[in-house]
Structure formats: C-alpha cells, structure tokens
Amino acid sequence: MAKKALKILEYIALLGIAGLLIWLALRGIDWKVFVENLHTVKWWGVGLSALACVIAIAIRAERWKDMLLPLDPSTKRITVWDASNVGSLSYLAIPGSGEFVRCAGVTTKLATYDKVFGTTIMERTWDVVMVIVVTVLAVIFKNDEIGSFMRESVLKPAAGRMTTQLWVILGAAVVAIGVFIYLIFKLRDRSKFFGKLAGWMVGILDGFKTFGAISHKWRFMVYTLGIWFFYVAMCQCVFWAMPELGGLTFGDALFISAIGNVASLIPVPGGMGAYHYIIALAMSQIYGFGWETGILFATLTHESRSLMLVVLGAVSSVNMSLTRKRAASTAN
Image (cartoon, rainbow, N blue to C red; front, top):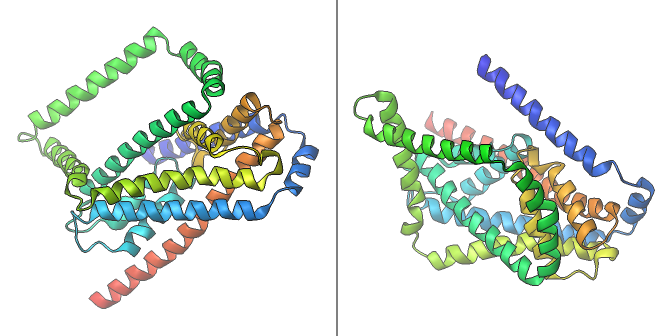
C-alpha cells in the first residue's frame, strides 16, 4: 500500500509539473492570433509529419529486432512492432515506463527480461550519440543564434543552480553507486539477494553486448541515421504546413529538433508542456516569431506525434491481446 501511495503521489507531482509548464507556455498567448494562424495551416504538411513519425517508429522497431535476434533467433517482427508501440503508449501516460513495458512484450525463455533490457540500454546509448550529432550539426548551421540561446536560456540558468553543494552530492552519488555495484559482486556468493542482483546485472550486460553479435552492423547504422532523419523531417514538414515558417530550412529543423531533445529530459507524461514551452521560447528568442506561432508549431508537431502513438499503441495492444489468447487456446 505504501509503495502504491508513493507512486500515486509521484505521478500527481509529475502531472503538477506538466500543468505548470503548460501554464507557462500558454499564459501569454493571444488566442485570437493563435486561431487566425491555425486557419492558415496546410494540413497536408501535418499529415506528412505524422507519416514521418510512423516511418521513424517502424525503423526503430526494425533496428531493435536486429538486436534481439542474437538473443532469440525466433523473434518476430510483428512482436517487436507491437511491443514498441505499447511501450510508447505507456510512456505517454507514465514517464519512464515505456522501456520496461516494451521489454516485457518481447521477453522469452532465451531472451530473458534482463538481457532484453540490456538491448534498450544499448539503443539509448546510440540515441545519446545521435542527439550529440544533431546538436553539433545544429551549431554548425545556426552557430550565432544557437550560441546566444544556449548561453542566455540554458547555460546561465543551469550555472545558477549548479552550486558546489550540488556537485558534491552528485559526486557522492556516483561513488555510492560504484561501491554498491562492487558489493553486489563481492557478496553474490554469500547472499541470495546480492546473487540475484548480480545475475540481473550480468544479464543486462549480455543484452548490451548484442551489438557485437549483430550480423549486419552497417544496417544498424543506416537504421540509426534513418530514425533521426525522419525525426528532423517531422519538424521540416510542419514548417511547410505553416506559411509563416515556410522560409525555414532543414538546418533550422535540425536546430529545433536539438532544442526539442532538451524537453525529453524533463520527466513529465509524454513531454507535455515541456516541449511546447522550450520550442516556443527558442522560436521567439532566436527567430523572432510571435509566441503564438511557436506554440502552434509545437502543438502541431507534438500532438500529431502523440496521436500516432496512441493509435498505433491501441491497435498493437489489441493485437497482443488476441495473440496471447490464440497462444493460450493452442496450448490447451
């Protein structure tokens, strides 16, 4: 009961943060201007953005399947696709839950949960690399603008919060984690609890190492580049959908995508509020667009993606349920 109560309180707190960010994003909007801008939207551009989202999701699922095959050669494409979509649906409701949910959807006797979880860590490692690449490219394309924005809106506020005490706490936390991991392996033969933890960590490492067992590493790299190309293309398509933003280039889409990644660091359901505020701030401070334009762009981009995740997640949930029922009836 206590754990459940804490989870409920945590979720309420996250919703509160999301609500605050939404309020900050919407408080200065001239709704008459917002509606006027909405009437000028070319919806075919929004549709293309949603299509780019689906393609990115499909490529990501295909890349994950390639990582799972060394663990279990019988892994099916549809199973990975459904698990990925259900995980994304879960993420929209509960921050951080998507990885755990999608791992459960593909777990088998050969691909145990800990090993599968290890593959997601490897995936996220490559995602971090691509975030860095996208950010560097954005700096190259928009050097002066992004430099000013990062200094005034990101680095200075962050520096004001990064006190000596905070660095000491972070350092102590890293040391504590290192000591705990050492104790886990040191005591694994003396304690069942530590033995299970050590086994789970070894399983994660096995999953992480599946990258070395992938038969076509070049395909993995192509998939990774493709995923992030279509992520950036989502922004470009919404530029085309809004006449006011029609003059922005793919380099600008790179920059906006890089800034949007900052929102993913804020643990609110589906990035709700955080993405809208950060994007509107960037578009107003760097490009000089009205706040209403920035919010409309963020809304079209974020909500079209969220809608696709909901639809795909719902369909995959039904498909997974039917698959389980068929498997159970066959077993009986």
